[in-house]
Amino acid sequence: MFFSEHACERMEERGIMDTEALGVLRLGHIEGEPRQGEEPGEIVVKMVFAKKRERAIGVVTVILKGREKLLVSTVEWEDER
Image (cartoon, rainbow, N blue to C red):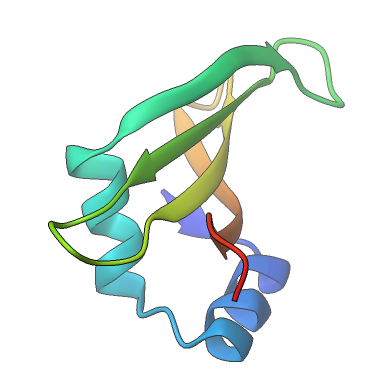
């Protein structure tokens, strides 16, 4: 598993720590339907999680088929502030 440069920039910009993003992947649920990625065999999935009384975080991931790796594409707050 690795973070894209874009994801790292967005986490810094939004004040979301990598440990929080990893928590979303461990404890969150899939939001919406998985979809085909840009490359053949890639699957894009958005995971979402919020601790009680805290803002929800969304983590968009790309499952890289054949390479058995997970790319964190971007990380975002799910509400608008």
